[in-house]
Length: 290
Ligand code: G1P
Image (cartoon, rainbow, N blue to C red; front, top):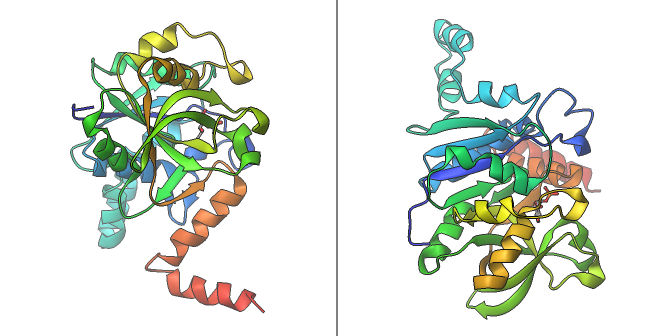
């Protein structure tokens, strides 16, 4: 894209109904993997890629996200007075240094494309990243950084991809491949959640995107798509047909934390690496295998 990516958009207005009752009063993005909420992993991934403006597209019942990235005066005063400096440090380092938070509202749930459009007033004419926090990607190099590195030679959108099983196509945006370029592909079309027999490939879109500002013009002119919603995939399809969209097969292990199984797996994998509980968890898991 040849332009520095300074801003990231986090669509967090969804109801999280797949996780009821946990998400009745708590945003799904605040569900912890071990001891850190999903949204904090996403913010850290963006900050590690040099992004300094975090734009949340939020909605009703999502106040906990704003509170999480704000200072917590009473908690901090209490921890300081009890000399609990390690915990104080954890509480104070939730928001990465030098990062600005912006909140815009999506008052009706009209789909991911519509959520992205809600962020338009918070952006100037520049490319930006989008991160879906329920896709948690564990690897030595952050997923957004992988997209930025791959984008250096192209001008259009860049998307994260993963190989999926054919029967999973109804859960993903699926790309049609125009050509393969080394480890990457150029997509000539994209389809949101097709039936397996209609899927143009076995490459599914993971929740990481670099989008040009012109995507807003495209979204504004889209008809409703899959599920009666305004789909980001449909906007990308317009650009894919015109100029192609670069698809990057992400390195690392992806956990679909929008599903109960993916979320449980993430807790195990991150738990095994956790300095406090890793060894005990490993011993416990071994004890389960008879
Ligand atoms: C969204 C996108 C889909 C993408 C997926 C990745 O779907 O619409 O194209 O493949 O995220 O997680 P959702 O999972 O929000 O239904």
